[in-house]
Image 1 (tube, rainbow, N blue to C red):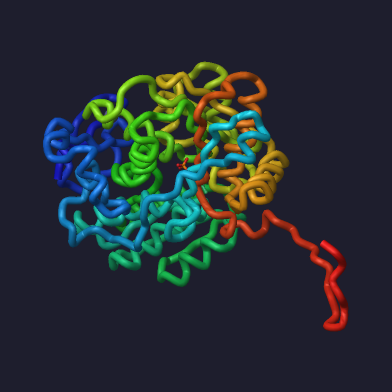
Image 2 (image 1 turned 180 degrees about the horizontal axis):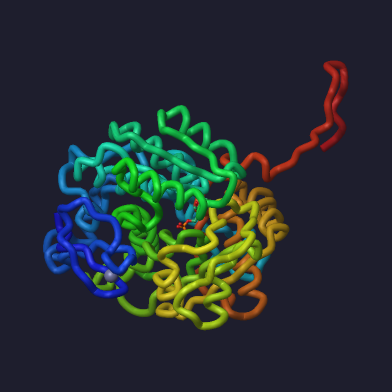
Length: 401
Ligand SMILES: Cc1ncc(COP(=O)(O)O)c(C=O)c1O
Ligand SMILES: [Zn+2]
């Protein structure tokens, strides 16, 4: 393994990585650091070509030591689809979508879970607890089942129903809360203090982000190490966007990429837009968003622990932050399905609405290469499509199409 240590991005304190650890003593999340010089001499870009297109393709940049501890459900590299028709229609002919809808549990949360749970297994953790908006809980529940770790999951009662089933059937202890993910987080914190479970809340352990980082590694590799100009990301807890930025910095240090980073765009809903508000005011941290509500449930995070890292990723890449209306999200979801045949989750659809806005304002130029990150499958959100097909009797004939 090439991990050198853990470090706090806020106060620079460092920690040894073979201990079970949560936050820095200052309360900030800890990030994993690697001996990138050693990684560079151990593996080259060319070596990757012969490797399986799975999560462990980038094993030197991941924190799991023993192969036996890798919990794998067949999660693999996700497609980078050119959205040609849609791109032309919105004036961005070089539009792409990275489609996370096809991995186990149907969302990118499987990336964080695969690595987070594997590392938890390696460290001997027997029970972990986490608050979730649904998809992360589902992913951690199934990977914990595979790893033999007890999962205690708390989600808002308003969260979409499918992840509930995934948690329940895989044997997690599932609880609903009459409140938001922030309320679930407080309950988990009390449970952790009382029962001694490991706290797997977003960014309260250092390893989930390493799994999500692989999105950035894949994007770089899929573009032949010539980075795109803009990446739009639906941002809740922010782990995905922080992870992509971390991946790019590691690749740059290793000399695998050079030049300007893609401008990272955090996309939220106008119903819960703390990062957008902070960015507009040029702040380094966000304020708690009161009465948060959006149908893009995964991004209903009123105040993220890693908000300062999300904002840093935006500022350092000359990115921006955009809030879109829920009605525009639904329109974008339908547009992506009808034009490109992709049934995306509302969080993913939000990135299209944001791209349209940024293309219209001139912030994205027509010739630029733009990646929408679709974080999950629309199949997890059947309630976002209302259908009323005509009901036929067995003797009815079909009209002309
Ligand atoms: C489908 C989907 N997209 C995006 C997010 C936001 O994730 P992140 O924590 O990386 O900001 C979530 C979180 O629950 C999600 O479920
Ligand atoms: Zn610290």
